[in-house]
Length: 335
Image 1 (cartoon, rainbow, N blue to C red):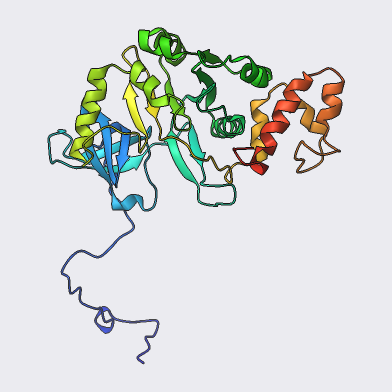
Image 2: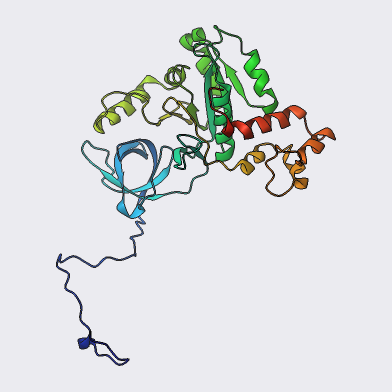
């Protein structure tokens, strides 16, 4: 093997020819200062439908983003053909920092975390009062995910013509969660949509719920048909010929704001949630944790919250609700 001394001449150094004839690879990436900003409306098999100004643009993720994936609600920067014409494809080169994330795992012991929606202001948890029966444990899990991800929760109770909402409202009363109660008749005559719209004005709201609770029916009542038809046309371009809730889909509201319809839930894993972050959703209880032992789960004999509540600083029902949510990872949704 030939060894070089300290004083080598340029001619002494061998270089391998580039057989492909292209430029050598570099870690320096283009800045794309002329990229246009857009919002991701839906994702389908690697193709992302984005809103750029007033145009619907189909795009794909640039290779330089690596494993970083864009999801519905993301604000992104695009280059390439932004005309929105049929058979054109733009390229997403940057993803803006997220203000909130709705995340879930397949199960509590599954380490793979999936971001469902980005940048939503609130999470509308839709549950039926009957047919199917309410699943409070699933609602609890959605609440934990909302608190952990920085979303404000909204409880939407459907089918009140089949069962009264009193029991569910009592269960979540201590959490002070805004709620709307609807019936099937109100969905048909538009009264339900109007009441829900009051909670959505100017906000980005993600809707979640298990199959059969009337979530997509409610979303359809909230969004004008012409706007749903526009998005349906774009889905046809990506290869999906009809509008079905198999992936999250962002739809604009007539008076401002967005609704994001998500697929029906079968489970909601919370493997990604750090229980210590859930306490931030309880500002009346959080000061009482200063006396807690290190790494306190807030559900053990030495927890300082018991004394804090006993001294009258907070409502005992709030502490019960906190501990119910914290322990929800240990219970199945059907319990």
